[in-house]
Length: 460
Ligand code: SF4
Ligand code: SF4
Image (cartoon, helix red, strand yellow):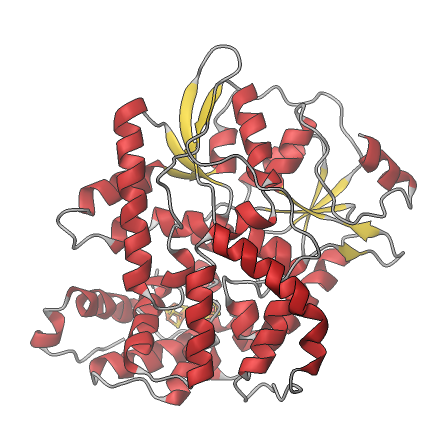
């Protein structure tokens, strides 16, 4: 794609990067076919190519984003399916991230929308505040029906009431007990073979602390010492995707300092992440700090150490069970894992080694609609994507759904098979831990036992 940035504009490293990305695009449109918003809405401006044109126009003309541009950028899930499809290697992620910052800085959203976004940006990265927020949301949930009714249609931006309703609907009925505190070290069992830091996560440690506890059990059984770094903060992913880079970079710097100190103090073989959305962002710290003389090298080191938990487990000498089970696991491939980190086969291979019958989900490249705060901010599109996702999952008739990202797990929720049997959604590492000596995962409000196979799941 031909670009027309001036030399003065190209002196800005972000514009220089945008220029490089835009020039790589050859307008072929292959990406449109795999873009969830284009598939649903059929509007070129809700496709990657359409958004690329909008962003190019905004950046080249140094124009403040219009309401229309904001609408189409806001509708992008940042699922990165387009990056997997693109034959020219267009780095859409870095382009849309830059556009979101422009929107945040140059567009004045309606007051209530601004307020809601500020609340989300404040609450979500702070686990203690998030826990209180979830309790408040649970109390407020019965009153959601009193909110003014929705007018959301494909061409209408959701109202703040639509968004509040979506937020309340996501609040869990009960919250589990908090997991171990930052600063805890879990010693390796037997001979020590490695030492890792495990990202504690923000929403995940409140909604499902059992995920990291499963990872800790599995890793320590393999001789790996696990450290929960006390000074660790939110990875910055949620605020980064809202265009609030100033906030995101403050969190990221704190983490880079904390992990660097831990690596220098006790040595770290890896920084493991059980929430793939966070993993994608931490792996990108090197890029985010490329122009920061004080942090560039440290950030690159942290990014190189960052691994999804399945990547690390795949390199361990795990004693997988000899017996196979007939439990069918539908593997939901989180966008951040498959498109963001290009990890597609590993989790399925590990589940298969654990003895499960692993099934791919049709249209697995399409997002479930979670996408950070997307299911709150774009509830109508997110709902349609969820419905499509659960129909695809149900079509393979699984006993369990496995996913590697808490956002997807909450968005998909546990669903029912056509015969009415309950299909729990569980993190991949919980299933791996279970099959290699850990306890059976919490399946939530299960009605397991309705079928013969479910009974085996309940007692395995
Ligand atoms: S990131 Fe996802 S929603 Fe956004 S343009 Fe690419 S494919 Fe479409
Ligand atoms: S597939 Fe890649 S090169 Fe083709 S239009 Fe999309 S972003 Fe541009």
